Length: 51
Image 1 (cartoon, helix red, strand yellow):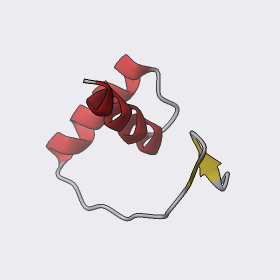
Image 2 (cartoon, one colour):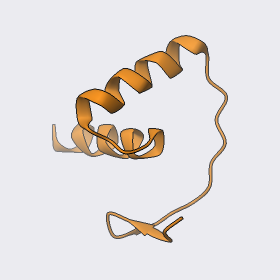
Image 3 (cartoon, one colour):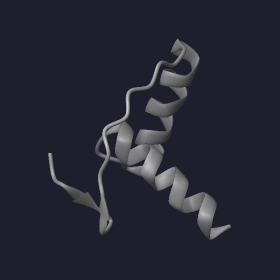
Image 4 (tube, helix red, strand yellow):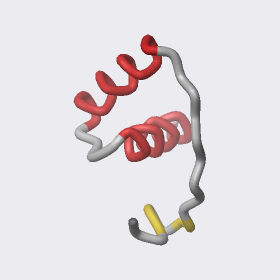
């Protein structure tokens, strides 16, 4: 695992989600072309900041 992403230091975080959330995140991952679920969250976060 790289120590940084998008120029920021990474932190480990464990989440507990429902199957509905996991399914939605997987869909978003495909739509965004993200490489992982954490990359998906990062991309969604950055989209939210842009708007």
